[in-house]
Image 1: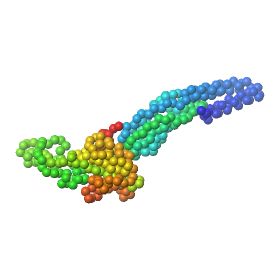
Image 2 (image 1 turned 180 degrees about the horizontal axis):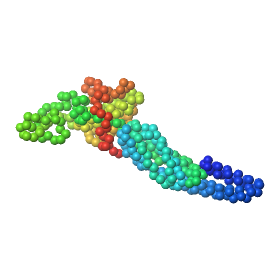
Image 3 (image 1 turned 135 degrees about the vertical axis):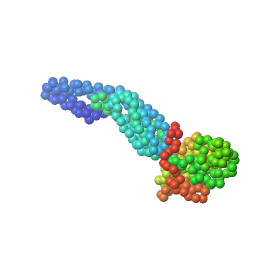
Image 4 (image 1 turned 90 degrees about the vertical axis):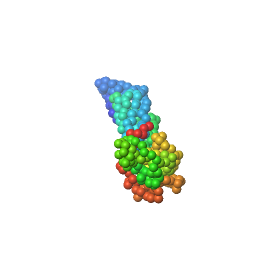
Length: 324
C-alpha cells in the first residue's frame, strides 16, 4: 500500500501546514492540516481493510480461429479498481478496464490463432474513493481455452469423393433403386424408372465407404503449422462427412480411427495442439497434407493438388456446430 500522487500531494500539504503552524504560530494552518490527515488516514484504512478483490472469470467455450467469445470477470470488494487480464496474444493479448467495486466486467476475446491459450492471471490496483492511497497485486484467476484451426468448405460429400478418392472406389456396382429423398444428388436420379412410375427414383450403389478407413497425415515446415492444421482439419472433416472412419497422424500426436461428432472433436483437438515437423506415419497415409514456404498441398492417390484448388470457399461449415 502506498500513496498515490494525489495522496502524496495531500500529505505534503498537511505536513507543511503543520510545520508552519508550529514554527510561526498560525493556528489556522493547523485547522487546514487536520482534515487532510483525517482524509488520508481514512483512505489508508479503507484500502487496508478492503485489500485486493476476489476475481472470478467465466469459462470460455472453445471455438475456431476467426471467432470470438465474451468473457466476464466478476470482482468483489470496495474502492476504485483497475483490472488487467493477462492473456496470450493469440486471444487478443492483455485487456484493461476500470470500475467501481463490486463489478462485473465484460470483454470480447478474439480467437486469432489456433492452439491452447492461457487466460490470466489478473493484475489489480485498488484505490480509495478519494484516490489518495493505492494497493496492487496479482490475483490468480486463470484458465485456458482451446481454439480449433479454421475449417474450409469442400462442397459436400460428393466433392470430397471426387477429389480425394479414386472414382472406382467412390462409386461401386449398382445395388438397387429407391425413392428420392431431399439431399440426393440429381446425377443419381434414374430418369427412365422415374418416368415409368411417375415419381423420382435414385440409383443406389454398392458403396462400402462406411467400412473403409482413411489415414490423414500432416507435416509442416517451421512457421507453417497453422496452415497445415487448417488444411488437415478441412480434409479430415470432409472425410468424416463422406462416411469414412478417419485416423489422424500429425507431428506430436495421433488419433485412432473413428466416426461421428465425437471423432470430429478429437481430430480438431489434436490439430489445435499440433506443431511443425513430420509424422512418423506419413508413408502409410492415404492423404498427406504438406505445408511449406510454397504453400499447402495435398498428396492423394499418386497426385498432388493445391489445397486452395480443392476448397469451395473459406466459410467454416462447423462454426455453429462445435461447442465446449
